[in-house]
Image (cartoon, rainbow, N blue to C red):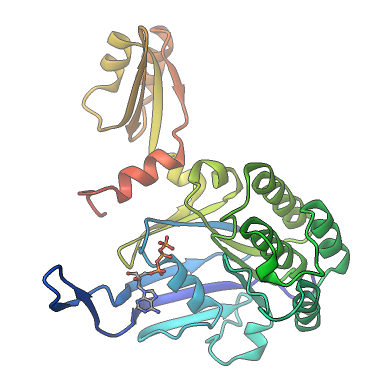
Length: 315
Ligand SMILES: Nc1ncnc2c1ncn2[C@@H]1O[C@H](COP(=O)(O)OP(=O)(O)OP(=O)(O)O)[C@@H](O)[C@H]1O
């Protein structure tokens, strides 16, 4: 990679899509506030890391990712993208946009052209394009590039998107729910390819997904967006340290859990597993070991559900 990985920064960003109207059952439209996609979002994206972008439906993920790729402009606030020390507003900024590859579920292919033609367009546009990677991944995903996108299945279109995202080797690569339609073997092949290519060609990768359990192993950093605001932005390790799990007999687990908030609980026979908020003190850890209670890491999925669930307390 000849260009340094891009980072990004959003400061107090608001995106309004104007007033929207919703039809009530009685046929009378009412004003809806659903037109605000981002509502004061502030965030730093670390260059040269893989960042997971999580959030519930309608949280504002796609809007945020579109801002970084200059597909959308903020209503207010500032967005800058670029290598460290040289970040600029990406809007109508060819230097920044030529280094930013956004891949959306649709695959962003030309509808009336063969897939091969769309790929040629990206190859010409992306200075770091790897024809070898593109060819290999298209073979791996068994995509017939002589077809128009409409003749491909949804999963194959997503696979083309994944291919162009990786082959572009852009200093900022954004995958917005690109897995949709892919079957499990294809998704796992994509994750493996992403990690291997990232290890060889470090760059900044943003990945939004609802399949938190599947993708959490890829993330170094995590951003959680909730109702248009940034709920948390930290390393994946910091997020995992927000909780822990205990597995053992009911009495011992409950004793060690104390009054901590339970994120998740399951019981199998006499064995109980609970996921709890917070961390154990050294003496509690010793007590847990002494009582035969296993202390484990907490799945990011459980933390995510807890943080963004209905009635959750925003920190
Ligand atoms: N072009 C648009 N016009 C009007 N409202 C929009 C537009 N794009 C997004 N919104 C609204 O902005 C909010 C955030 O949408 P966005 O697509 O960014 O969420 P998301 O987190 O990507 O959701 P999902 O996980 O469901 O894809 C939603 O309420 C959505 O309806």
